[in-house]
Image (cartoon, rainbow, N blue to C red; front, top):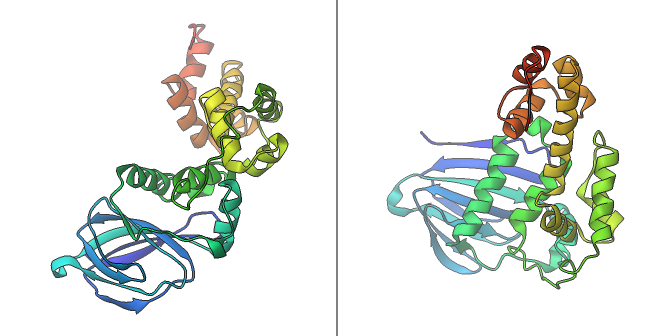
Length: 276
């Protein structure tokens, strides 16, 4: 079966496309930065960076305006996933990664046999495309893109986040603790700490063991647990603890505690101790 599919991402300036085809693409260009993963089969491409061949597990890239083509190896279908990022989105991400504007950036390697990059792409694809896009918070999406693209766009590490004062991270934790229902963004947290978005993400994770989004979900799940054990109806508990709906709360709750909210509430009503 051959074909193409466009996927909703919920992120402005980010397109996601899947393809499976034996088509030979003529020389063409894109307006956006492209980065993807070959899932199966292989492709030979001529680009501004020379002729390359990509196979399963390889990460592939293309720059805006870069002339390239693509033909399948041995004429057999190849399957791939691609993210296309607008220059405006790259500018925003570039600020978080401490690199320049999109006009001064480029992917240097059209094909990367890099297992870590492939895993990062697969994780980003799963979280942004494979998950429930309607419920993917802006904070989670930003974290996913920043983590995935770190190192792909020539970001520089200056060590400024390695010696951050503990009170900066404590302040960010307090912001979340004091408003678990709030729509926190990585940018607002970074601004509060006087850091770039990626520095804030990395420093927060180093200090707490969780990304800001994971920490927010943890705090919401703890609040939901208290409400549930107090007998609050599950749908009300979900809304009162900041979850999009009851099913979203149930997934987080079961992941955290190993049982469903209904089971926990039934145990509490039956006076069976529920401990974590």
